[in-house]
Length: 262
Ligand SMILES: C=C(O[C@@H]1C=C(C(=O)O)C=C[C@H]1O)C(=O)O
Image: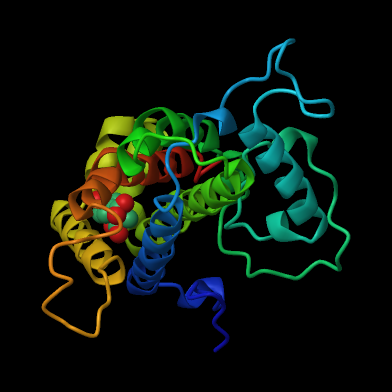
């Protein structure tokens, strides 16, 4: 069975809640590593400032981060990134078509999944709430590298959150009779209750903090030196999941299920 990048790429029929959760667990590694890389730089506020008449850079409208993400997505669209149903662009409206021959990804999801995109919410919490907690204040001039690290974080987080489509699909297939009445009634609260597993969420929060400790520790040959210094604050990674990543994953799950019988 072919596996790519730790993600389930088996046919839809073999996808199980366990295999979907394994992918989410592997994606935690990608998210934690991406945060470690971003935390290397200070906040670097010029990356995010809208360029005004006086400070505008010829050829760039809006902030450097917008420019960087848009142009990167345009390149990645041409290289075929968004043909994968797991990928969602932050600026999906102006994307050029893919230039590479299409790969046939297994048809797992209801077509409605294609219309679910919560990246504007991800963009908002990441830049306005999370980034000031992740980084130290300051400006070291590395704006392009900063934007590049942000894009890696955003893409890892977005992929994880939109994986909620797959989670919802396997949950629905495991218990269609439980979900159908709530879907017919378009009852968001009932769907949210059905798909929530609090014990799983508690484990996720503990595991991501442990990963932040493990991946973000100072590695020194003198093992007594490194204790207690982490590149990313482990409780902050738990908080990222608790306040934003898991709620938005569940929002994607609900949005998907609401349209599952269309
Ligand atoms: C993703 C799932 O659905 C919900 C969301 C979770 C998450 O985002 O990590 C965890 C448990 C569930 O409440 C799941 O059941 O694994």
